Amino acid sequence: MDSTSAIDALGALAQEHRLALFRLLVQAGGRGMAAGAIAEALGVPNSSLSFHLAQLRAAGLIEQERQHRTIIYRANYPAMNALVAYLMENCCAASGCEDDGCETTADERETA
Image 1: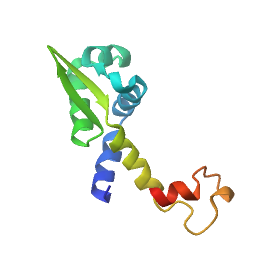
Image 2: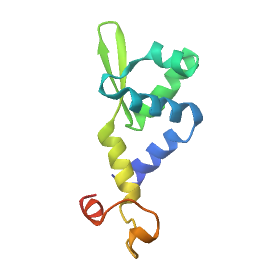
Image 3: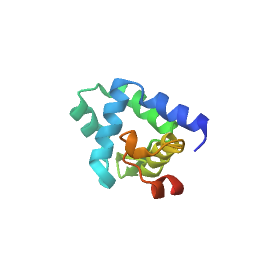
């Protein structure tokens, strides 16, 4: 992941409803959720929800799939993992992680 993509993803998440929406989709797992179920779970009007879904999609954090007349939204786990890896890329580069409370191991840093 490059810095522009990371900024886009973090910017998309830097809003209360979008962060809650993304976390809800992460919790839903691979089965995802329909827009109506998301709106109901979050108490967000459909017009606002469409805007927030579009922002997260543009940042590459969620995906959508049409199933008959319903659109299912899912978290884009590879994008989420890439963002976390980007943020942790140089974790504890100058010191041991155990001193800083970081739970990332040296092996995990090398593969990020």
